[in-house]
Image (cartoon, rainbow over all chains, first blue to last red; front, side, top):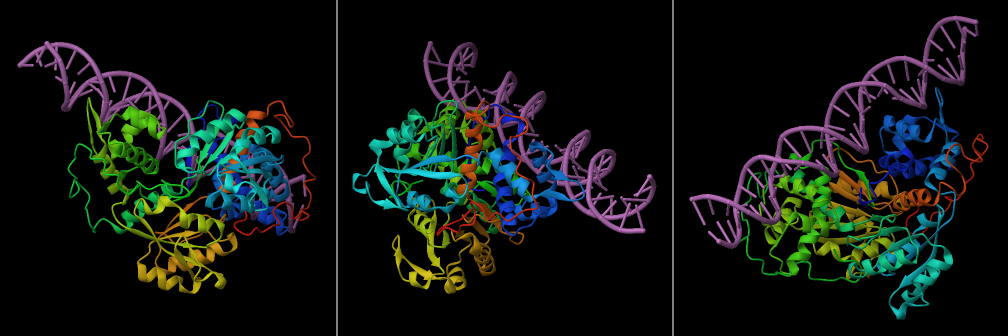
Length: 255
Length: 255
DNA sequence: CTATCTTTGTGCACGTGTTCACAAAGACAT
DNA sequence: ATGTCTTTGTGAACACGTGCACAAAGATAG
């Protein structure tokens, strides 16, 4: 999985475990596919296979929502789609703004998964005046000065940040001040937000590093650098600011 | 946090808990920033604040790597950077291929976080013959027919999939057959891979849905649809294939 | 109506992860 | 040297998530 988490560890929302909530979209996707193929019912075993999880876990997850299955038969596909959608809040319209229309922001604006689940891109916002007016994915980019007005006028409560790391906290503060209470952060920074605001983080660099760790394990054990203490602990110096491989600040999103 | 997980629940790699591994990149980033500012040492408290975690958790995480701190003082920044980099396998070069150069693939190719951590984009691959030769982020796109050769020639062990969902499994199979053993999947599909292959998943749609869930909770309790049983359980019909909001198949990546 | 068969829903045990709280280690001053 | 002060490293308690295994529920057939 490719995500860091930064949710309030506070009160487990009305008894549904966080881990279950994170899987509901997975079930929903599998169910939607079944629905399109006009499959009327599905067993926990089948659905679990489609969603890539253990069937016992799936049944337990559903049990938190209520008893929506029929023993000996399985689950009614349409009914479950509705129940999960409702539980996730997808039966209502969620206007979102995307701030930072670089390569990634443009990709997000074009992302079909938004519209197909009740998420509506209300506005694209960028700090570069030269971009103002340019349509991306059919939506004209607006200048950052308009941020507060846009959020207010559209009742936006979810914001997506795809700016460079340096701008992220500032953008975040403005979004929050304007009324946004949920943020999806693609910038590689730790955002600090007041209580009551949810932040979720997507970090490409971190995902790759985790893969590299396991990859090293698979290749390792016999290659360079064996288990115990390493070969060359480098000087342990008085830190000479080596401005190393991270001194860059790439166009889109540095790590 | 924005990631689904699909790692082998198998043997916890040499005693370092998976949760700890997932946080190491976070520490590394904070440490790199300190290093650039020439800060020689840092306490667990300070570093934890910078990384957005609890200090006790940070100390326990580091304790799995060894005793790299000095009581009464803290941790040597440079030394820790090296130790964590080594543990994550970032001291070596990881050639990666990106398959599917749509909006998202292009964004990834331009992503600075790759190069800055030992990841090198060895090739960009797309199935569209019209794209072949077109440079993206300075790298010419190659046709999918070349996939096996590219992976073999460059010794690629990590692949990134940013194709539409429909093509993902097929691309995945070819990557694995060619020798790739770690996959970062951006397509909204469950990939099935043989044992020994790691898959991590980044799913934008899922992250937004999780945010929507919490958002609904915050706004809810008094708005539409109260707690117990909902207003209108829809017919529970014999599934009339309503080909609803998901009948689309957007350019980049449907959900 | 009874028997059989399928599949759900869940009690329970286990493993993983988090947090507290404190003893031990070392730095530093005197 | 000795004492004080800071901060690490970790034992132990707790919380959370997972998976087994089975009883109860309902469908279906005879």
